[in-house]
Length: 212
Image (cartoon, rainbow, N blue to C red):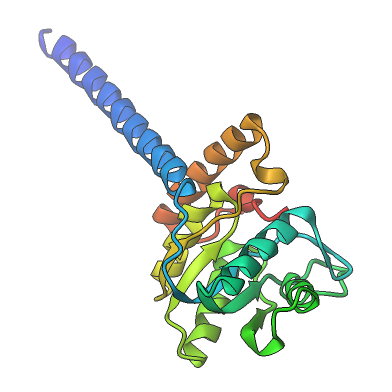
């Protein structure tokens, strides 16, 4: 008879312990997403990697244009030697995100031979894997990741897992960084996406909608 109360107390402690650990893991991950979002590392790198976002018949969306403009400035300032544009195409598209990025950079005075177009990948992990393979072919080893602030930690983690020595310099403009509500939304989303990636080493499905 005395065994059951003890068992109940043990079960309660296990449940509470699990909840506390879960809170600490989620909270700690969210803090790191926020912390890395504030980093702007201008250490010289072989290339800037522009994570893809929507394009409209070869014209970058406002989100993608903000990332491209940030990478263009890094190139103009001598922070990077190349700019890699990434991202495949959606059904019915005439252009890949990588191609739209290249066209924009060329129109804004970045030499074609300084652009590494990688028009592959339908999610962050696919784009990172494709650009890492292209970088190895050109013996490019270091990369500064250019995306929205909240996307930075997950993208950097994936790049490091693919063998790149990577750090981040996120854009501070564009629709995804303008309001506090948007910021909180993406911090929550990226926290879930990063935890999923750590567990599964796979794209996060519904969490991977950062490329708008």
